Length: 457
Image (cartoon, rainbow, N blue to C red; front, side):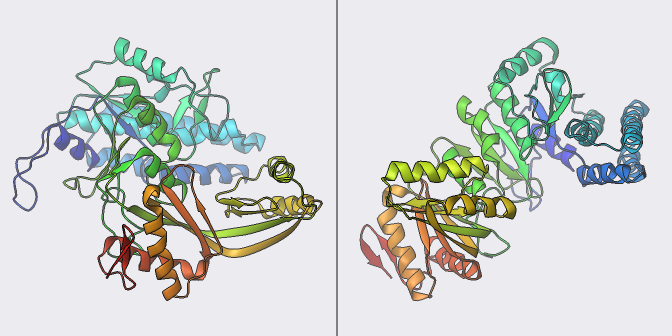
């Protein structure tokens, strides 16, 4: 499916499935970035755990990849390369079984086999259907990282090294099929890039090559106005800015990870999010401008949030109190999502990833200078909006919340100028999102919209 998708981008069919003319412009991809096939990464992680228990079994992985290669009758050379990688994987797992240790460094090497097998199969299939292609491990095209196994960061020199590699060793008429998610550190050991790693590989290569557009293919028609699992009438958004996309991703939307957008942002290259199951859909373009005419771009949320209220006992000056509080947060390595403060009080939110034991230790330290209250079962509702029109946005929001008994326990307007967040009880979050989506996107606001200070019913 994906190989044919790439071929159709290079030579678009004359008509779409419904018989209408296809107006898509042909493209020539310099590189295709591949993740592992299916559930391969999860299978590799499970295999590592099994090896620690004394069992080594990679037959499911062999079957998955062998079936794909036989289905397309791929060349024997490709089959041999993939089997060699899986043999190496099995040898590594036997080593884990014997020494009873799976370090972060070893774990990164283990999960890399998924991407490394995937690109060889994809390149072979592209060549088979008439698209000249060559498989590359990421380090062979210049992707280098720091030493932080499991969540490595690209080195500042990576963009230049990618550009040099493509200029010196990759034929521009050949599609480079490159492993996403992985790289090499300075010691030539395999590292993984963490969440959004394949997207980061794509944007880094796109930035290095100064391409016209970076395309990221997902399973939805681009960025939507809300989660379609909750909001049936959620619709795609045609344009968003990098800032808007970053805020959407941070607060729960399944789009590009904020870190993955940085290379494209710095190089000012648009990123288009498209649906691999609906390729004719235009998708969402992420660029520096977005659509400045919209009042609200999208609604997203994070659930399972803890709200922490911190009230000063000593009436310290703001700098002393805030400094002491955030010193304790730094000590326990806890980060916050949303913050609101006054001279003698601070409210912050902590998400479900923060360890409960660390939160308890933080509370003990904070109680030396403040009263601390924890409220669990909360959620963050975030509007990605034009903060320049925040008076109209907030007026509509609070009219809706008041009419439907939704209590706001805290709110924050982000410094990014595109984010307004509200903390509500988790059992009210779905209703809040549905009502606001009706107001801002469905033209059926039951309390009326406020626009330019006027009520529109």
